[in-house]
Amino acid sequence: MLSFAILFVFATFSSTFTLPLNGINEVASLISTEDCNFYTTLNTLFECGPKSHLMQYSYKYCQRLVDVRNTFDNTQYQDDARQCLQQKLFTKIQQAGEGTITCDSFKQMDLDSHGSCLAVSFKQLSAKDVVQFLAIFKDTTVNFGQLCRLANSFAGHWSKSLC
Image (cartoon, rainbow, N blue to C red):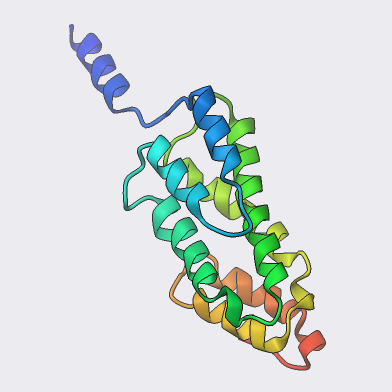
């Protein structure tokens, strides 16, 4: 009887989730260069809540960049990076398979995509754009160091270290 109760509690509170096919199609249709609805929809479908990585990091910083998009000299970089991050996360969700995704697993899946998506064409940005880009992420400990290393790897391109 006790083992049944433990199994019931585990099954009830397990955070794995199987995304229905119509949910997959909805999420795929939201991958965008223009907005961050992809993250809020994922968060809703997986019932992760307002404190999830999807809301506290992915959506938050995506939206910050959207809000200041037109102050950048090179808006194409930002658009391409936004779409790349969403596409890579979606691909990782598909690869993970049914029933293996948890709200906690989004953090690693999401962060694994940052290096390749942000490095693409990074040196096409002006020093002003890079400084502005880095300022948006200054309050995060999640990957600010990674962004600084990326920016400084191109420092010769801008004639100085940027962070």
